[in-house]
Length: 303
Image 1 (cartoon, rainbow, N blue to C red):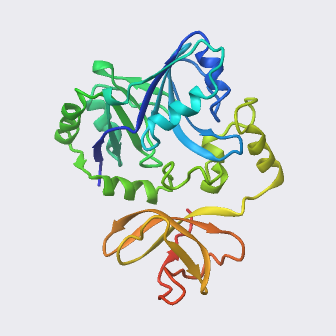
Image 2 (image 1 turned 90 degrees about the vertical axis):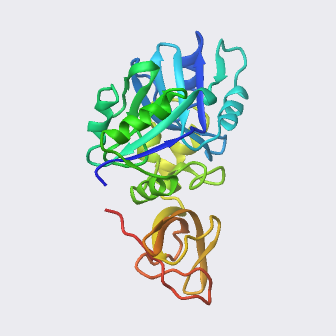
């Protein structure tokens, strides 16, 4: 489609401000927030072992005023993670999730649709303000031309109708998931969660700073960078029939090699993420849903 549009309620929109907001978040977030007002930075919240608790786009509205957005990670999870490390910092964390709505736009004409909604097309790593307090930034539904329009909830439906009137095609959650999965953009925590490391989902290049200094989980990230490969990795797989349930086992040559994560229907089959062990994995051989079933699932090569 030339432009897809999906209206949804964000899982998390937190306002974080106060005199110590920047220094506090910089010591918690995996990516570097030392950027000017107007920046939009994607990254992760890890535990002490470097496992992924949540992801967010952090919008820096002023020196010590931030909006933390997540499409899939729960606001309660992010807030609990932050407040566990608030000690003497002058920081206020407010859950404003119910006050916001979001629209995902993707496809070749998505940038033109953004302009009809009253905002400039944002550059990578920045957000553009729009009317009514909305903000627009690069989204994670499409790797090349995807945008998130974060709007006050009262105005989101009308903004969505304007996007459709401008030529966007109405898309449901399944269609948006298909675009995300084929774009190799894992969702947190559905595809990568508290049992996994960022590197297992290929997020080390987009969500991790190796130069910013200390943050929770930083030592584990540094060791992984220095010592080499992880033992498991998310792969995109496709096959016939219904989409498998998350957590379903995957086999190769009758040996369990991993499990399914999120998946979406495509035609008469499905495409989805699978977390696979790299030990003795043959990326050219087919996979199956059980040791006895047909090997009719293939790993989709990157690129």
